[in-house]
Image 1 (spheres, rainbow, N blue to C red):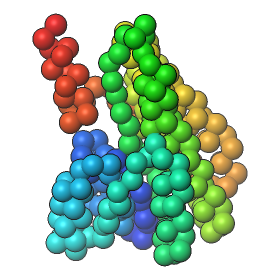
Image 2 (image 1 turned 60 degrees about the horizontal axis):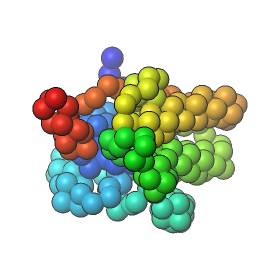
Image 3 (image 1 turned 90 degrees about the horizontal axis):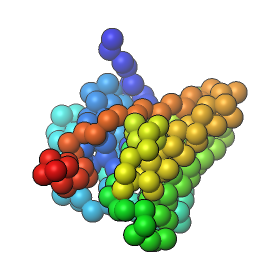
Length: 206
């Protein structure tokens, strides 16, 4: 089935590589204007934008640490000033780490939930508020994980963050349906990306 996203603007957090890059590319091919955010992979993000524009597609990239709530709000304020209405939000940015629970530091816990859960909440809230102001429906897609549905050793903090994201998605679906805004979560298994490469290599050794 071919999906036509012509005239729509999609925001993909963590869209410079891995799953986010693939999602952003698919949305470009469906005709959407695509905005990606990235933390440190400026070269990859710039390459994505350059390739899109060379192919006659519309794309842009913004540096963003999703753990920084003020930075998220500033980004959305910029969208508002520029008249950029986000129709589709993909909360893809995330982190993973392997730490024994007995060795887990409070900072490890906070960082995991800030990136994997709080950032998604803020982006969803700001997107939904703007959609309601515009009087249009929209789509919120959260990239979760099977780890949100099963406990795994050395990843308690990660599993909790993804379980929270699943419940956030359910809450958004209930609260935003009346505004024509849908919310869904996608829960893939382990995918070989830059983020998971070290973890996969460690597992393969054992």
